[in-house]
Image (cartoon, rainbow, N blue to C red; front, side, top):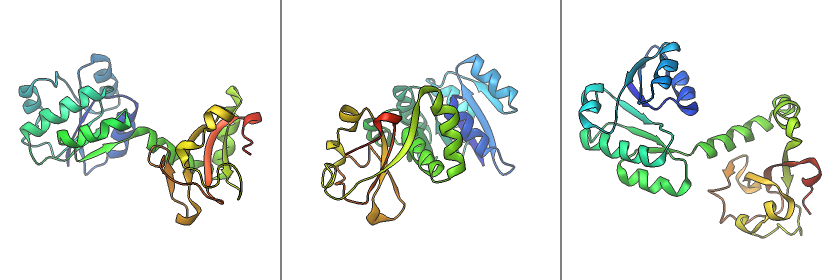
Amino acid sequence: MRIAIFGYEKLAVDIADYLNKPRNDLIIVDNKEENIREAAKQGFETVLADYSHDQELREIGIGTDIETIFCLLPDDAENVFLVISVRSIDARVPIVSIADAQDSIPKFLAAGADKVIDPYEISGLKIWRMIRKPIVSQVIEKTLMSKLDLHLAQVTIEKGSFLDGRELAESSLRQQYDLVLLGLVDCNFGDEFIFRTRGLRHRLGAGDILVVIGRSEERRVG
């Protein structure tokens, strides 16, 4: 499969590494020479291009041999413009785009993207999976978090606590306890992690698990 990845920032590097398999033919497209040099050093086919010009998009292979496109530029406005430009050239090619802001997702879908990635949601899911593995959780605690006196924690809501029956948006964990909420696991739905932006209207109940980051003295929630 011939895949074009626009932008070579951190998420693009991860996606390119994952897709770099014999059955895929990757091309990295960027308008920054330093990003192109880095991608070339990693062995990828690269194109330095101004993707605001339709002709340059066509020369890359949009509308002909490119079968999937990832729009991973660092700015939402750039990605929306790129989605519109690509869709105007090829009405059928699958387009996957990153969205930096949750409220930008409808704009990407309206512009013609087939799938929109919320990197913060992906990070939340990754962290949830990691802290389910004690050894990985310990490594995170002792390296990344300990330098800042930060800790990952699972907080189980007890029956009758001030959170029992409240909507997630009303929890006020940051204001009252200086905790950063990543998401929650509803005990009625098994082990599914609900990222906080998807669960703001979710009504909490006894047994639900909140996944938070905070300082050690601030993790006790009454």
